[in-house]
Image (cartoon, rainbow, N blue to C red; front, side):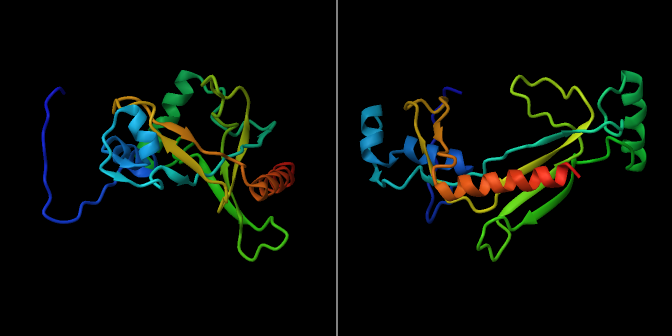
Length: 196
């Protein structure tokens, strides 16, 4: 920290920072939309308006289903959890020897779908997707559903010229009406499956 270093390449450079950090690094380096970078005090190396655009992300919706049979890890005492951990580590079995995504499905939910357009993952617990981070409070399972090829596109922008500031992410989920309609149909399919 606090030390400046330089690296030079004699040919092409491949930037692999992921969908969020690649455009962030480019823009911090002055490569991106000049009308966005200049007000932040970033010198323009290349005015490329497409940097940070066309972000494609999958909105997950998780219908959850309570079950009456105690077949999940919910409610285990510390002693039971300790006992269940040993078979997982030693024999590769037991309730903790799972990736908690036990099954998946690809469905055709659109009227004219030739290929599957919705993906579902079955989670073997009531789901940890609580905004406050609290654990599940009952036995159950979740069906994580998303549109396979969403048409909605978002963008990445810089909050400031400080590389330690998180970028501004606007995924623009469901900005395309087709994505909303397909999401509703996917949820309806999950409800049919889960309620069986």
